[in-house]
Length: 451
Image (cartoon, rainbow, N blue to C red; front, side):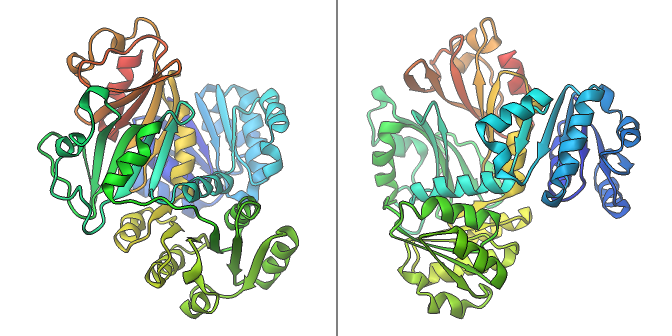
């Protein structure tokens, strides 16, 4: 595909890096020469210096012939994103996407308005991140999860802590604890250090492994009981950082919580939050000082969320909260190279806006049979949901005879109201919704099975 990205900030650079690995023709527009020089030094892309709202600049970037235009200038430049996307569409771009920082634009009625104007997707990374945190707070025992078919199939991610029953066993050993004739789950992958392993029957689980399982909804509780994980309801929450993500989490969580607290070092922001949040206690304090966590009795909370603008502060605050005895910690980690470090230091769940944004946008670069794409923290893998068209290669043989790529696993199928765990003799039918776990190198080969 021919793709133009407007904005060479952190999100734009990450998108460019990710998309360039798929051999797309990329052009990046930015007003800052230093940003473009950094991009040119690290990626094989074309750069255009100038304002993305300039028609001349857009023409220079060739937007009249592009398949996808992505406006991801920083959140403070929302108007630049919207105007450049609208111009690109009118000039001939097939699909356009724009980053916004106004939640009002994401209401159903307003999204329809922007669709009518020509913008195919609006995304608000901070709001999506808040949504993911709220979902993680519902699943206290998991590091990550993905729903398919209204939750009838779920991909679960959990870490094997010291003493977990699964350690030194194989996926086959774990599977034997269930009725194999009524298959309820399947082990998809293991993240071990910086390696993602597609397991075989001889693979052995080790301490600190991150295990990914696909399971039927009614089997989740029983499966997790074998892992030693214990689900509990989170009623008391402390949030470090009252920015867009923290304030949205507090706003949505406070209505059903026993207690919600936000700590932020900016006094003016605290005053604004106090007016905005009716059932949340707002504290003016610096989270870099662990004494504030002791003073505010963080140890009495069920969960601790750190979403300041500083990755190191978020990681260290979560580590401190964990040592105080908080069962569930979630950190926003924007430095991607720190994600594995944060997990090794004991942070339970990681949120990264760049990865979230990539998940939303990447679908537009794939075949139109892909419904959703989700990157999984702690791995270099992703989960894709395909809709099967009649006559596609995936319907021609049982899974074991398809020669599906080694770096990918067909995990499960939604067929009407039924959920199916996929195994070797499973046959995929037209209009099935198929959940695929894949490593990057296998993506292009997977796509041809659904063409």
